[in-house]
Image (tube, rainbow, N blue to C red; front, side):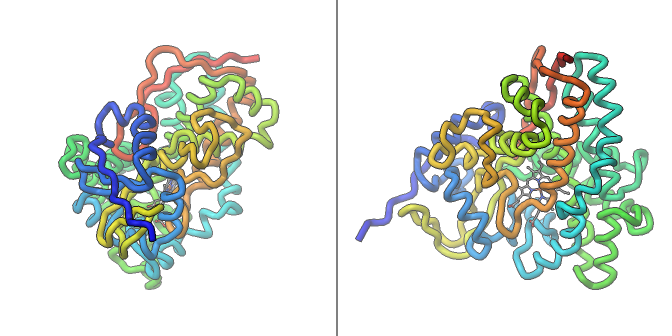
Length: 400
Ligand code: HEM
C-alpha cells in the first residue's frame, strides 16, 4: 500500500503585478511542486498540471461551481443564478436559453456581419501603416459587436461602459484583500444596476441574447432572478476575453513571422489551428475556481471535501507533461484539447463566436496584403486578476 503524500505548499502570489505580467515561471514552479499545491497566501489549492485541470473541468459532480467560481463571497453571491455559478440540473435550463444561438452553425451565419465591421477598420489601419492593435483595432470591433449581438440599447444608454465593467468584474474575481479587486467593485455594482434598470425587455432588441433571456423567464423556463446575472454572464465574458485572443494573436505573429507566413499562405486551412495554438499559448481566461463536494485524489495527493480549488487553465496549457516544447508557438500543433475554454458542462458556450471574430479580423489583414506585423515601442499587458490581454500593442504592418 502506498502512503498518501502530503500536499506541497507555496507562497507564490498569483495576483502580484510581476506575476500578471508573466505568469509562466510561477506556473512551472507550481507544476513541478506537485499535482496539487496549497497556496498559503490565499488558503486555496491550485491545480497547475494539465491532467488535474482536465479532470476537474470534466467532473462537475466533484468540482462544484454552485458556491461560485471566484475567490470571494461578494462575487460568488452576485453570480448566483447564472450559468457559471450553478450546477446541474438547473445549469442545463440556463444553458438551454442560448445554446442553439451560439452553435457553430448559427455563429457561422454572423460571418458577413463581422466582415463588414472589420473590413473598413482594417483598410484604414493598413493605410496608416502604424497603429495600436488594441485601442485602434480590437477595441473598435469587439465591444460594439457584443452590444449588438446581446441586443443592449446603443451607445448613450450606458452600454458604452460594457468593456470597462467587464475588465472590473474580472478583477473582482480575485481575493477579497487584493487592491485591484477592491478598486473594481464599483464596476460590478454599476453594471448590475444598469442591467436591472436599463436592459429591460422593452429596451433590448428583439433578436438579441438579452431578449431571449427575458422571454425564457416569462415562459417559466428559468427563474426571474436569473435574468440579470444571466445577461451579465453572456455579455461580460464576451468582451475582455475576445480582446485577449486578438491581441495575443497579433503579438505572437509579430514575434514569430515564420508562423504568420505559414498562415497567410494557406489561411483557409491554417487560421483555425493557428488560433487554437494562440489560445494554448496565452489563455485569455487564466483561471476559475471550484469547491470540492468530496475528497479528491490527484496522483497520490488528497484534497479534502469543502476545499476551494483554483483551476489554472493558463498553466495546464503550458504543461510539458502534456505538450512537448510547450513554450514554442507552433501553428501546426493543433492542440484542440487545450483548456482555455474550460471543458465539460461549463465549457465556454461563446467559443465559436470569439474565434470567428478573431479569425475574420486576422483574415482581413491577410486579404489586405499584410506580410508582417512588428511590435514598435512599449507593448503593455493589461494587468487583470483573471484575464490575460494587452492594454497597448503598438505595431507597424508591412504590405506586399
Ligand atoms: C476567447 C474568448 C473566450 C474565452 C477564452 C472564454 C473562456 C471561458 C472559460 C475558461 C469558461 C469556463 C468557466 C468555468 O469553467 O468555470 C467560460 C465559460 C463561459 N463563457 Fe467564455 N470565453 C470566451 C468568450 C466568450 C464569449 C464570446 C461568450 C458569450 C457569448 C462567453 C460566455 C461564457 C459563458 C456564459 C460561460 C459560462 C458557461 C457555463 O458555466 O456553463 N465566453 N468561458
